[in-house]
Amino acid sequence: MAKYPKLFIPGPTHVSDDILDVLSTEQIGHRTPEISELIDSIVQDVKKVLYTNNNIYLVSHAATGLWEMGTKNSVLKGVLHCSNGAFSSKWALSSEKNGFYTENIEYEWGKGIKADHIDKKLSTGKFDVLAMVHNETSTGVMSNLEEISSLLKNKYPEVIWLVDAVSSMAGVKIDVDSLGIDFLLSSTQKAWGLPAGFSICSVSDKIIEKSLKIPNKGYFLDIQVYEKYYKKSQTPTTPSLPHMFALRKMLDKINLEGLDNRWNRHIEMSKYARNWAINHGQQLFPEQGCESYTLTCIKNIKNWDVNSIYEKLLSRGFRMDRGYGNLKGKVFRIPHMGNVYMNDLKEYLEIMDEIICQ
Image (cartoon, rainbow, N blue to C red; front, side, top):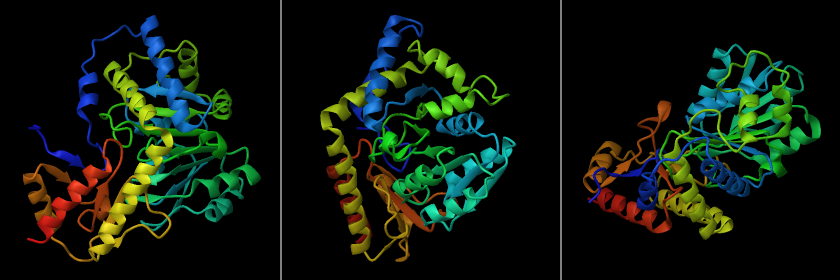
């Protein structure tokens, strides 16, 4: 029997036993041929997951650090943020605290980011960087990248585009090269289905070249430092080897499942969760057309006693989500990403049904 409840929260997500086993693999030296072979194999497969030829950095810290890697290596004039939830708002705050000229398009939580709003701001010429969250975990909103990509390609090709994909990378198809994303970042504790503490980013030639023009970036997050070690198939500092072994195992599982099957699995689970909510008389929190594929955020209009449901689910071996930030107590979220499959989702919702009907 598991020591802790199975996680049905949107991060960290459930880690499967085969991944947990790999985490205890014996260590290898971080400046050896073995580590370079491991990094090369991971990088090549991550490129396939992201449909990119961009460089891939493997980073042994939270994705919050990659927010600052992105801005520190790209902002000369100003950064335009789009805030439609807790995490996009925190990223904007990070830019302000770093001293960048920052403006923020603030959306009502539950709304998706719109290209015409970005166009109006970028037309002022005050910004050379756009930063946004693709899949806002706090609200379950997934914004349309294709519309924003078209805008940037056609009108603002010089603008560096930074995208947080923490809860969508490895769960939603993101064609990095087709979209033209300069810096795509994620951490491993959500759709990757690994423990927290490790991150991944895709880095374009455009931002690498821009980084050369920017002074006073420090050392730890300097893309030029990462480039030096990337060329040697190494990392600037001693990496978390357990995470690397686990990521290699997860990529093997993704290769076995097949990318199209993986994307479709997440889409089908999202449909199932949405239908379950609607059939129970509840309301989806995101505006129509912006619903996430990796988690479903439900507005509790039926006034269920979510705290009671939470306690009863705990007694059945599951940890439920009860909302995040400003939405805590007003919504609850159902994650369906990473190591969660349709049978897991159905089991969880069937137990919820039993509890609700008591």
